[in-house]
Each structure stands twice: as structure tokens, then as C-alpha cells.
Image 1 (cartoon, helix red, strand yellow):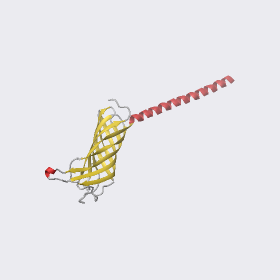
Image 2: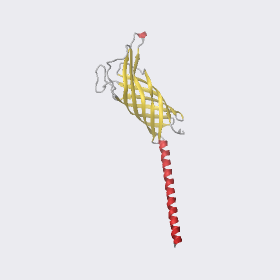
Image 3: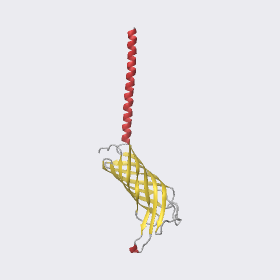
Image 4: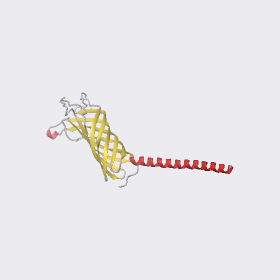
Length: 224
């Protein structure tokens, strides 16, 4: 009888220890699978390049204002085709005009706008190409205007925030490296017109930006 009790106790203890081990192994596998899945779905990245911009409504045309465009991104993969990307960028926008002396134009104008911009893009991948589109929010850090004399001190103030929309194309060059082309346009004005001739359908000046950046995505490169 005592031997049976001892055997039963040993069996219970063995089963308890075994269950704990099994539970530990299962949890370890689950955590490992979740971490692996998370690493596959979420990836961070960096991008750096140049922006070329103009401002609708400033009487000058052409993407003649060059600036810096770069920052960091978080990429979320839904499946093999669809994904989303949230970015935080420093983008220099504005407008520039340099007169042509041969045409009797000696004027000079520069609008320098520095933004912190947060785009949210939906992306669709087809082989090495990824097409993207989505809205964005930008906060103006500084905005100044210059003419041939120097800083324009009584310039019309800029709005501190900008709502915009972007479309773009990414091309995977090699493993984690890629290039990106993007066009961004203001949805709301960055300020009114100097003339004051604002209307409900054309309330003020808007940023137009074309950017070219090199991208790098952290983590293991996906196979084709």
C-alpha cells in the first residue's frame, strides 16, 4: 500500500514537472513564432535624398528650389502585395527664381520652408516595383523669403501646419537598398495670396514637391 502511494506520488510529480516543461516549450515556441512573425511584418528604414519644389500662386513656375529630404520609416507588411508605411521626414520646400539678364530680368526670389513631415502611405508591390499613395501632415519649423536686397521682413506669414497627399514609386535596386520617386501636393493652402484674392476653390498658395531619395530597410532581405 505504501509503495503504491509512493509510486502514485512520483507519477504525479513526474507529470507535473513534465507538464511544466511542455508548457514552457509551447510558450517558447509561441513567443519565438510571434517574434519571427513580427520581424517579418514590421521593418524600420532610412531614406535620404533631395527635393525639388515650387509654390502654386507665387507667380513663378518651375521646380527650381532644391532642398534636403530624408528621415526614418516603419514598414508594415499585410501580405505579399499590400503594405503600409509611416514616415517621419525633414523636408525643405519652397520656391526659387533667378532672373535672366539676357532677357532683361534681374529679379531674384527665394522662399525657404523647412518642415517636419509625417506621411502615411498605402503600398502595392509588383516584383521590384512598389507603388504608394496616401495623406500626410507637416509642421512648419521655419519659413523665410528673400529678394535681391535680402530678407523680406514684412512677408505674409505662413500657416504652421500643412495637409498634403503623395503618390510615388519605389524600385528595389539590391537586397535592402532601393530608390524612391514621390510627388507631394498641398491639400490646404500654406498661406493666402499677397493680393488677398482668395476664393473658396483657390484659397491660397500651395506646395508642389518632387523628391528623389535612396532608401535602406533594416532586417534580412526578402527573396524574389
